Length: 137
Image (cartoon, rainbow, N blue to C red; front, side, top):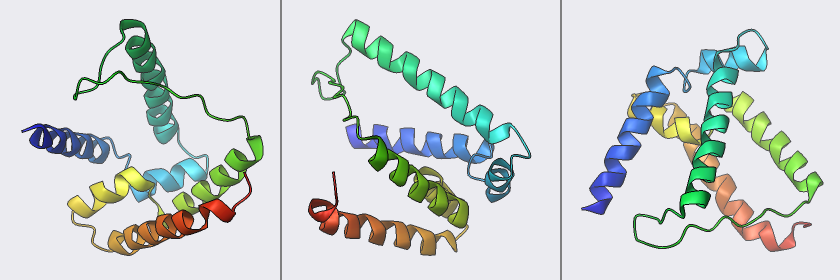
């Protein structure tokens, strides 16, 4: 029964992404050209809401759906790895016109050409898993 709940949350999230045009290639192009505030507003409001939700979870000691304590592990301070990872992520986002979340939304909306991007993302994730131990920390 819990799986159905996750499915409906995912479907709702996909509808919100699509209706807000967060999955629109045109809106993403506008963002990378610095022509419109639309995507920056969506990302900024998601950031603020995420910060607020994390603080609520920490202060009220909210548990997960399975009843486990939610623990936030601090990230390491390796600036270079986040810089290079962000650059790679941004390049892929700009080239593909979609980041990982909206890729699934676009498939669900019937844009089947995004399946090529989704396959490349899965392949890239697989390759990272193979090479992770050999990459610098």
